[in-house]
Image 1: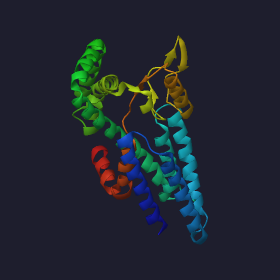
Image 2 (image 1 turned 120 degrees about the vertical axis):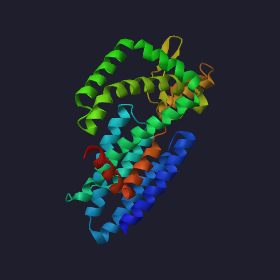
Image 3 (image 1 turned 45 degrees about the horizontal axis):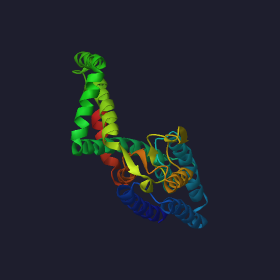
Length: 284
């Protein structure tokens, strides 16, 4: 019973969070904090009959994801909404104790999140590059020309690996093209970021968690350095706007990542046999 309730609540929260992230590029704090409180509260209620290990499983999962979320947030990889939602997922999925196969569910979710998130991010950037190809294509061509020597070197390495190992086994074929694919991916991501993600927006549209691409400098003094914006930074920006000292800032918009949580959770719940079979066919 408790598993069904937690799955339903988690799915509803992820659906709402994905919608708001796609719509406004942010997730309300009340949704993330409410998610954590709700799942821990449900675990506490059921712990009366099922034993307190049900509650502590959520607490342990929350603690592990708190560490992971802090790392991603303070390394500027994720925004605050992504990090708080990961903490909620830790409390919802939990880490069962004593350890069993069920204890690994949170690990599988996290690995799926990284895998699905990478694919989702690349697809999102490809669509964005096609839509803004007038800006993307010239910049990508410039970057390829800029790294021409490295381009030929990586291409030669890929050909060498293909001739040496590509005919032996399918994963070796992917190993052969990996250096060249990684080179193009690096240039692609760099070109998309510069041509599609970095833009000037009015201060009133800036929200907590946005990435400031250029520091705010007033009369030679740096007021806010390039970083992930926090609530105190927003107050400074609005003060600058009211005083007439600044009206626009340069931010880097990222890929709305929350839908990756929903896709990864769907795979965890209902696609386990599918993705394990798929990976087995590639690497088995």
